[in-house]
Image (cartoon, rainbow, N blue to C red; front, side, top):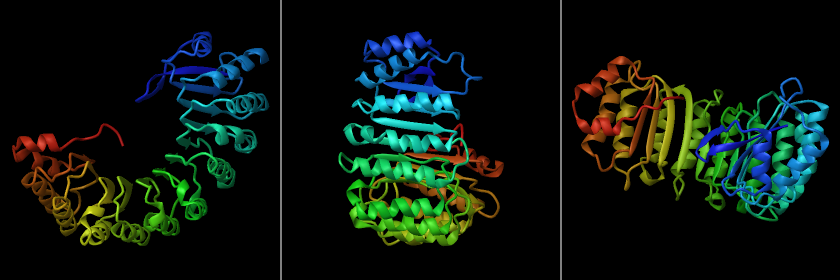
Length: 375
């Protein structure tokens, strides 16, 4: 078993401290030890598999730590690894400081073991706010969903999650429907943020998502991440756009960074035209080309909002036949600097669109345009 300390709360990397250094910090209950990563690898990959006594020592230290807020667990397949994980699960039942729990597993049986052993942790930890499962293998969605539903059921006795992140878990439309049905029955358990990135969701899944968006009892939901669900088509986006347009309280974030057809932008401009303030504060979208009129309408709607958006992220804009619309979009923001997005992120621009920005020679565009360094 390998353990490490997170360098900084905002940086997802861990210090390469020795096993003894981190364990000493745990046992001293170091207040600077706020994020902890625990890897239970294959024997061939581990620098050292500790003795049974050492493993018990680590588990007890984690259970008693009162300053650890984030715990990341990575478990590889193998009988010895499952035994270590079982001991860790039992110890976690005594911990009441962890706010953020993240899993990464390669063995489906780990989920079954976690479902059986982690009930006390989910039921007793009053501070737990975030659950993330980052799948690094191909599971049937059943094992993952059984674990998630167990965690939600146990949290009913305490409080809801603020964030559920199922990146790459491939739960599909059935998994989405199971979650939405649970939140419809128990709206007080609706999280503020749900990440469905890379989950093989299609138009049928979007029907379920549109129901939770439009459910007035689930207005706590503020962020939905649907990027990299390439089976979502125009009909699925239509359900989502219609549901968003009817919300009394806008989402803070909607992420649709998948290469949708260019005409999907019209779905959202039409939905928000009669309810401008339902437009998300952070809107991220990707296209395969754009149409001029849709981009003009988008710029016009955004600058008519009561308050400026926090972020507009657009992928592949300005290519194909959308060049003139892209220029009109940027012009609208420059003409209404008080209503333009605080951050405009444009990714994968063609050279012609980039040249059109810099030719304007307007200093405000440099403040407005911010290109991300990844994704």
